[in-house]
Length: 245
Image (cartoon, rainbow, N blue to C red; front, side, top):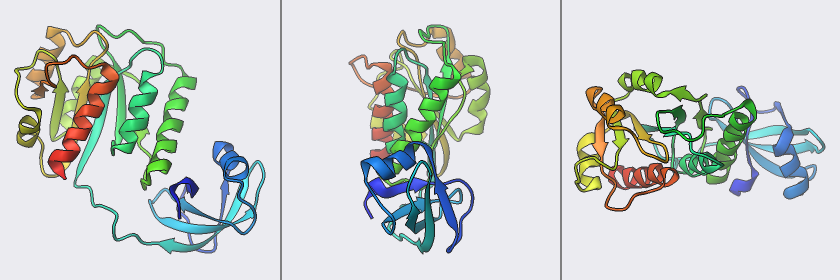
């Protein structure tokens, strides 16, 4: 079944049950994929169980009957969970971080504001858009769960959460130069949770970096070129994937 026909549904489902799909997913089924009664889709429930379902009704709400559960032995077992704390950038750059980060396996996004943050206006509409982007990206790339996008928090609150992680990876252009793959191999645990922290357009202040170091964050140099804030997290995620694969 192609990835375009995968949809997330709320709650735990069982064979023979009926699922209802509304909103943009219903629009996609009816008007983009142009599916009709009897066509099959794949649904993933809140317990990450995957089923085939036959469409029974198409409209503003699509109804489908669950037929059988899909078991995929090829699905990788992820021992190390990665979250990303991203200083909210201006414009729609956060959309890019969430979309591509979701494709690269991020479990949770923690937007935050710090001293040099340019954008601080995050309303309910923007937060809802971020979650929709995460959901769409998860469907597209074949994930069995949708990344969570938390409400933006102050930097001080983010620091308090460092203790929840087995490793905190702090991207800073003034960190001691060292090969990134080597530093990551030394810092990353074999399993557990790791947090990638990326600052705003103007970078972290020395005081902010020192506070992170006091909480045992690993300071990472990403190379001689200054990366845009919406690029840095994706570079780290790609290299982490290479180091841990």
